[in-house]
Length: 226
Image (tube, rainbow, N blue to C red):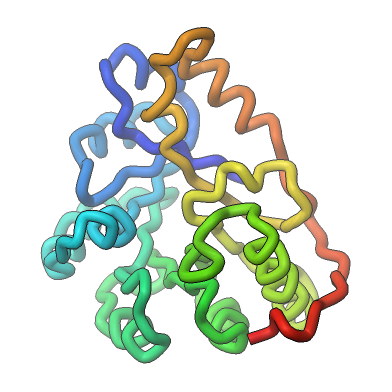
């Protein structure tokens, strides 16, 4: 399991404390993108959709395509395909169809969308991201956990070996029962300045927690399957 740490870490000296880790760079906070490509193992480019949604702003996706294009030359860098946080499946698929960088991108399945769409995406793409949304917006809440169980039940029934699934804003899932291949978080960027915290110890804590590699079918509550 790979832990992508949000790269908007300041001062620069704090960022350098976690040299050699994996980093996530948001299109909306790109100031360290060149730096983490020189000090990190791999880089995830986030499209900034969630931040824009919270702020009530829109992103020019053509600018995102151009920005990500340069960094996708790095073989260990990949990007999150544009998505609409509270949108329909048709809106998401339309954005996927416009994505110009092929399999260097990862589509997003939002937890309020049909499970069948998630399964289809795992069959068509090398990596798939999951985003918490609607009634499943709180990671590790009861409704979130039930929905995630249903999702992994469906994925595991379709694949002999589990595909690469990335949990957006999912660092808290580290060490839990769901077999995510990767997660990301801005925990270090937001909290490293607090008392008794520092970037290195925080990264050590997260990076030392792994998810299982397999999935055991979980019982489903029928009223929660939607």
